[in-house]
Length: 289
Image (cartoon, rainbow, N blue to C red; front, side):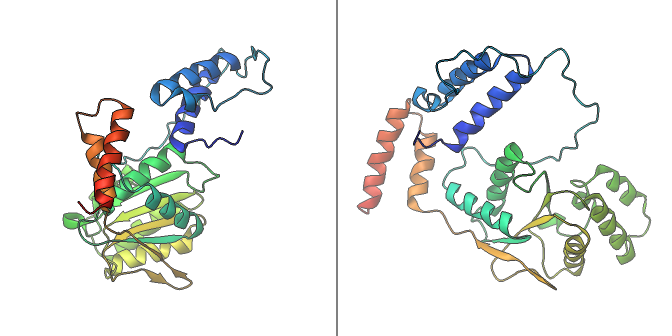
């Protein structure tokens, strides 16, 4: 009571506890096993923050009967999401703030200068949401389309994250004209019509008429779809009744460089040594050394 529970610890505990219940473990056995797992990954202090209520009672009952639990034969549609660079540090607060903007607005434009790490940031954001996606968060599916650089134009690579079947249709079309593009825009909108999806376009040219038309149709023809764009400063998406919320991704601070150094340092073997090294380096940063 009164203890703060870390988000990453809560996720680790839940990922251990609930699958064990489904596998047929008793509540008590699943709980104790998950405590050990959490303690091994973090600390025993973090693991002890979880308690079974009422206390002092053995919870030797099953929630699920493993012999009759059946999984649906329907294949789950999964979209490939790239991983952020490892280690990824210094952006946690920015990430939570950006998520808050996504929850509150239909369109968010992540703006940052070249080299600030926009793509790495959204990869980390995708990973975070992928592990926690639910109806409560308003995001059940994530689609990431990287249209920066050589893939800036509408193409097969643009379609692939939404549905591989669309790529086959695109390859079968002899003429790639505006009418063809509008057809595929409508096909994507139909696929996403009722879903609570987050569409991420990494590096779109917001002066491109095709991209703008796609975004406008997506907003008009879907109910709960949200859009995250990544662009350089000076560009933003506007549509009748909708203006993108701009989220400015600023350069990392010296403190973040310290975090990265400590994370990668091979001479800090324990958590205590890492924290001691971090404190020493941060004190030098504060002194301007």
